[in-house]
Length: 132
Image 1: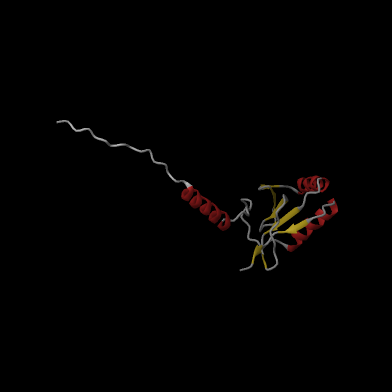
Image 2: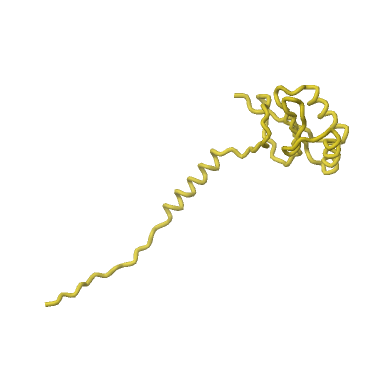
């Protein structure tokens, strides 16, 4: 005697709503815990300040290293090249961000600041790291 199997395979559906919830929560977690402030590759030790704030716009970044050498966009520049870059930045109304090492000469920082003012740059900022 031959018996017939009456097994029906039903195609199931995965409920992806919980998976979407988990992925969404992970996305929010990583967005809130990550830092979006990127600094250029030149290693400098910024001074600390209590009243510093985050700048959100595009800046021309001038880096003054410990030995008072000048860098723009991670490459060393001469005084003449700095003057021409500042002149272009003034025409474009681009703000300047000065990142000076803690051990850099204050005279060099003031010299760069004054040069920015002479070239007509209106917005000049000095980078600091938050005091903890």
